[in-house]
Image (cartoon, rainbow, N blue to C red; front, side):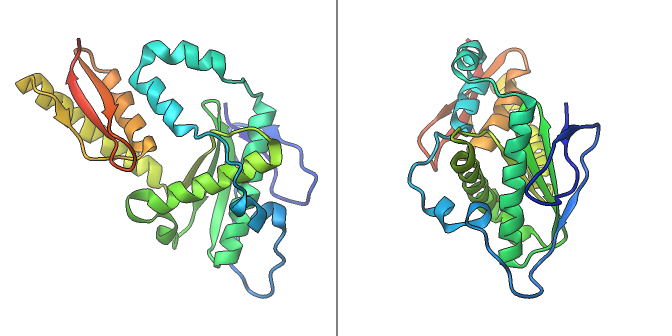
Length: 232
């Protein structure tokens, strides 16, 4: 289900549920900018009461499907309206960042596969992605923190900029399948390069869907990596 809302028109907003999500445009600075602490604010960035990371728990679930039920039981279930509210808060925060940094982009906010999402599309956004998505991951954590400050609950928000995550997911699918072929051909475990939590989950999802092989993560951040081996 994809949830969407009408373009931003002020503090009061009512989410709707449709098949597509309208975009709103975030324009760069053309004059003096009013910065609201709740949307762009320093308070959000400097808060030390950070929520627990959602990515690591997702990776554990992907690598260990047997533990998925237990993880779901311990995770509070949010309604579609709650999830959409999270995407609204995230979109407002990202819009403020783009305004401050003088970047132009269209912002989509939606709920997909039970999690809030914000997608930013534009022609000059690569600096916001960074090398191997490092800047994007940092912006995602800041945006999740903004949601936590506003709602008091951790968020599994997924932020994508310039279609990076979709393209990277395809690349990692090919990497995972290549590793599986090597394992099946030679029988030896294959260790992949260090990856982020998002990247590891993409690989786990592909490997776990192929019979006869399994994947697991080893090491600690930022050098945590996936090992693909013959299934026990």
